Image (cartoon, rainbow, N blue to C red):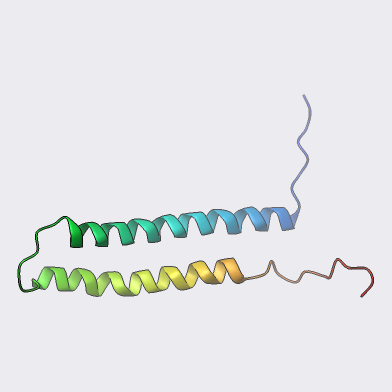
Amino acid sequence: MARKERLTEEQLNTRLRFIIGVVLAAVLAGTMGSVLYSLIYVTQPMEQSPNDKAFFDLITPIATFLVGTLSGVMISNSGNKKDKDPEK
């Protein structure tokens, strides 16, 4: 039985960032989907109910946090990488 080669720290970090990005994007898409569903397909009264106001007041900071976290994960570099260009 052949042994699998161990992953390097950089490969593990890349996989972790990918998984975190996919999970956060899925949660953000689900949140936006539920908000759009509630606006489009649920009959709304002429005045906004207190429950709907509380729902949207709760969703706004959650979506803002998810977008900020997702962008931070995608922008961040993988630690203290050394230049791979030997000429510099």
